[in-house]
Image 1 (spheres, rainbow, N blue to C red):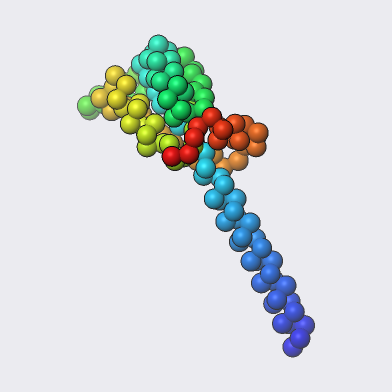
Image 2: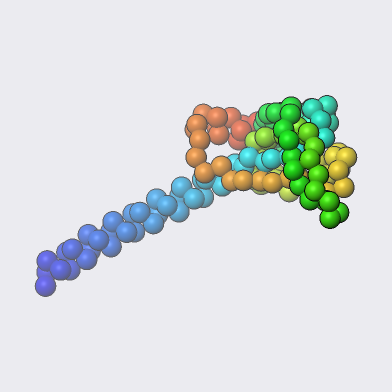
Length: 135
């Protein structure tokens, strides 16, 4: 009986340790987000990117100048060239960042999609935190 209890105790301790580790990693993982925004061209993307970085809403915005987007809008299939922005920020700033993009974007319904950063270069993630202040 003592052996079973010891095994149970060891197993419980392992599970408790894993759940604590998972919780701390999960809490840390969602501290930063990558936000994707499409724009009609590179000039609009640059204007929005400068505003986001200057306003401390983003640490960095990478711009891919030419992508092809195929989508349905008003019951019609469209194909357009666009620019794609990959923006890095604190998750706590995503709502404010979204509001800024919507206010400065020419599209009636602009794409703003935030994805939590689960893992990355610790030094880079720390830099995001240093550049973008807490909410």
